[in-house]
Amino acid sequence: MINYRFNLYAVICGVLCFVCDTATTQHCCYGFLGVGRRTFPQNKSVAKTSFCVVGAKDSYDVGFCCLGTTRREAGSAKKFRQIDYDYVHELATYAKDGGVKHFHYVSSAGANKNSSILYGRVKGEIEEALSNMSFERLSIYRPMLLKRKEKARIVEVLFGILFKPVECISPQTVVTHCDLLARALINNCETTPKASVEIVYNREIYQLEKLGHQ
Image 1 (cartoon, one colour):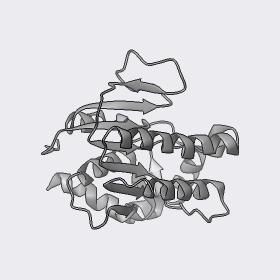
Image 2 (cartoon, one colour):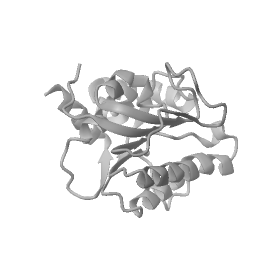
Image 3 (cartoon, rainbow, N blue to C red):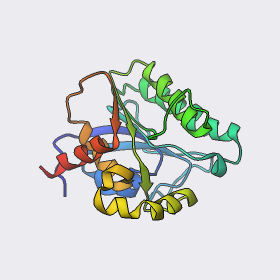
Image 4 (cartoon, rainbow, N blue to C red):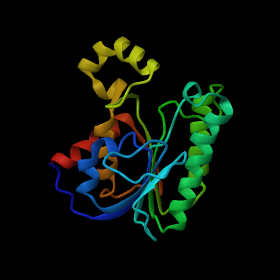
């Protein structure tokens, strides 16, 4: 069990990384506001809307956004952009207005605003938009293939099989376990940034996760 040396009020969006590792949030936060498209575990009073919100508070210390989907899951390019750009930007605005100084955003290894691929292009565009919001500190994470506790996407299953031999030798090269990613984000709250906006690649995500074991 990691013994965190701080207690925070956090805004958390997206159940992917954080709520699948509830022990992490319980040991680093006094409380949190959860925003997501799915029900949060152990939450019995979820608003019946496209988002669920729990534990609302007037101000927060840190924000974590793990929200994301694919064009296939969203149903169209327009809906995909609404979730991966509009909703993320709206959450970041809420966090900024709520006093958040350090905002964490889980992006993708292929993020590039000039990409011809919709997924990577939208990820790159929202990265740029967040960078222009003047957070005191912005941490953007670019994990590789995500290994989930939830039902994995088809493409993740296929690539998981393809890259299995590489994963056995050098996992930080090809995969990112969601619980590992969650701990890395938490641990990064204690590090000293080299710049106000930082891009955290997969090898660095693994390094941050190890900080909790020192």
